[in-house]
Length: 113
Image (cartoon, rainbow, N blue to C red; front, side):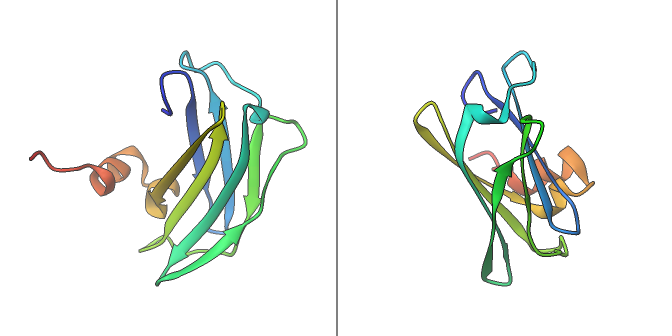
């Protein structure tokens, strides 16, 4: 979630395709145009590669094609603007390529203080 009224889903394939899907707080689909200035990059072994993102032909997602990527140790950085506010997100690529929510929570959860 981003705030209380924007839900985003990010998908990435080993071939380097990135998709950003949006919905509201009730999970009703939103057009891709509700966010702007979408930027993505892959970080691996200290190097970053930009992925050009654009709204797909049907207008329901942002998509981009980057280099083929091996998930282990790679991070996807994603940014966009929603209602004038910038959002910056980072995900371990393994959580976007089939290992799912449990892996994402494990890799990004902060231990209790």
